[in-house]
Amino acid sequence: MTTPSKDKHRAIWGSGDYAAVAADIIASLGPVLVEACGIGPGQRVLDVAAGTGNAAVPAALAGADVTASDLTPRLLETGQRLAEEQGLKLTWAEADAEALPFGDGEYDCVISCVGVMFAPFHQVAADELVRVCRPGGTIGLISWTPGGFVGQLFGVMKPFAAPPPAGAQPPPLWGDESHVRALLGDRVTSVRAETRTVRVEVFAEPDAFREYFKRNYGPTLAVYQTLAADPARTAELDAALDALAARFRASDGSMEWEYLLLTAGRVEA
Image 1: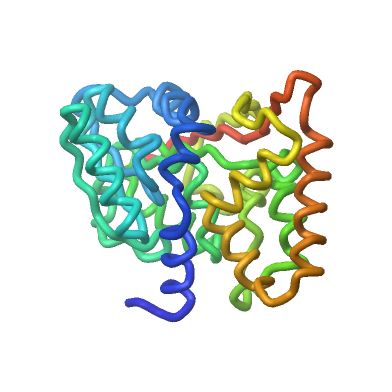
Image 2 (image 1 turned 90 degrees about the vertical axis):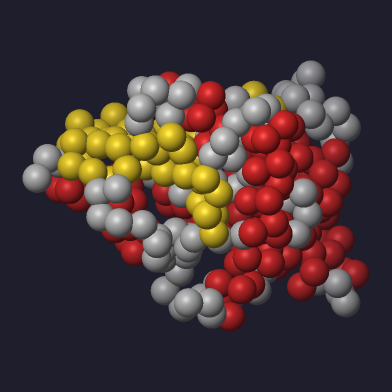
């Protein structure tokens, strides 16, 4: 069932050019998640909040039978086109991470690469991840950490953004191991969690990050749209984003963006 909140979420992620962000910045993360989960031929894999297939496509390349699900049709259409250009056949399904239209225990492995973390109601989304994973199967997640660059980005944007739905939790909490362990609870075992970084080298100039995200990244576009009639506040946000980038930018222009890689086994029935 669609709601104004879901429609807004869909519109945010359908704006900009998330395919470019995925290709330019996080292309390496999908294969990392596929390897960590041990995905291979014959497995049924569900990628939740798959976007344009950053993890779904590598899972298919590993030989799995993959369903890529996302709330935003535009992202699915782009992902399907990109996969077909590689000769890959995946199932692309419009689906809300908080109400997945799949059966209990339908998948051997359920993954999400910086995707499910943006579902506003964390426990509801976590319950769905567990529900659709078969007993003995694997759940694998990559999420930006609260203290890393993207976690700090959302902190910087928060004072300028429209308020989230009542009861919504901040996305970067999914990058806190204790938070995810609490969400999954005793329904999983053999939890493995590791904090890593991805090296980002596409922002050569000091203001390049800001301009790139203003063009391409839906959540950033949405914040700037709320400030469209307020040049002073827009300038404040410009300065805040430039300051954030400067804190993380090395002398060669590169950045290290921190994420949490977490895998867990669904408890046997």
